[in-house]
Image (cartoon, rainbow, N blue to C red; front, side, top):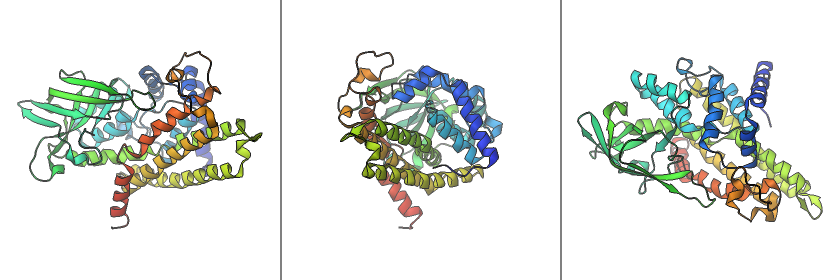
Length: 398
């Protein structure tokens, strides 16, 4: 299930693999491998290690700190990170707001924010969804009213991942109510330490606290934090979503999880035989692997286009749609492989340092929480229904 690589690309993969082996802290690798809870310091520690090599933002232009790697080299890098059980590079700065600032920000914004993203000095979160507008993003109601050299922001955002850790938020706000609803949206960069911001955690069904409500009450944001032109934020938001949907496919991580399915199925017995020997289960694994290989070819097309300066098109929606469906299918295979041991849920077992006797194998504790957590993947970044509408309109002409 590997791409055909040139000798140079094989050497590149080997160099990346050695870097992962020598540089990834063992305690962080173990947490990722076992599905334990990662703290902010874990992410930042790893991002700084990668950043010191100049590899944190391989998709950026070289003049802003990118690597100049080819699309396939970028793909290899992401895949090797996942296979090594490295934490995922948090996308909100590197993959989302960074490209927006590069494409639409002014020089002052580029010179200030981009180095802080590369150094992991700033942790970003996304202010898109609201209590009354999720998939219908253009219906957002968070208002930003001009007051001299500031905008006064009032409203609420929801499902905001890692807002409790964030230093900055890139936020869609309504600056005009005239004309089409898409026409009155602007793109602001908001300091999360500003007076008037309240972060409220939302506890998910897997016991996690990674998402939040964020409330704004008379929050003053300098007009210098406006990206691009006022009332043109919808254009920038669509540009960002194309990048978000591309990385959401997360093919390397899915490949790592398929490997985990095979390992568990080799250990768990059904009627006295390893589950991996069951022909029906083998077919299920093979079908997912084939789908993942097909998706990989689409990803390469998108990355080739990005290298040529082309923004992701409807292919990004296909990546998001099938990539997240495949992720869910793999969690179902894991659930099936572990059998009854998936049912007990002990939240504390996901904390590093928990030393009580486990129920079943050590690797069982995180499987059910992962299954439930991954129900969200076909919703965030634009639900599957939205992606199908985009594909129907842009590709099929319906």
